[in-house]
Length: 165
Image (cartoon, rainbow, N blue to C red; front, side):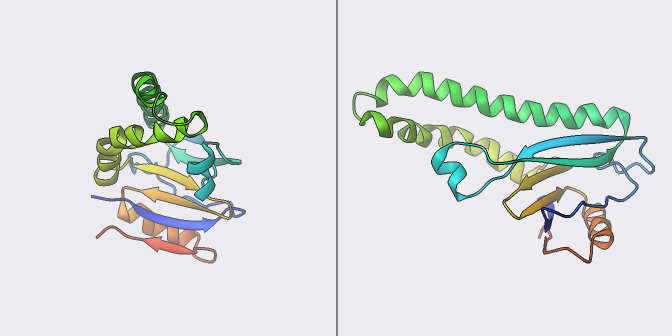
């Protein structure tokens, strides 16, 4: 099961259905603010983050913490794997690779270690996620119905819609 992705221009303020993005409950009582940063081809090469992006989405009070903990947990997992790979592999890489290239050489075992995580997130995605680019934002929904309703509310500016097969 993959997510249904809807791409909108970055400058457009997205309109969400009156349902929780996490559990699809009607008339959620609160909002959640999600912060992310832009990504591009340079993100991987420079190992830096882009400009911050703020998304506000409707969510139930109980689901708000589940959504936040999921995002924080993902970030902590990636950082933990990254640090473990750096401290484990650097002593073996440094003697054989020129110093300026060592940080890029350590990316190979890091990516290999993240393959199971990437597969998991591809086939069992979170209920709601966002990926920001320089000129657009991808809104990713596990629920196809929610994604279609989101498209209807933002139809005048929808750039791309990718449905799971």
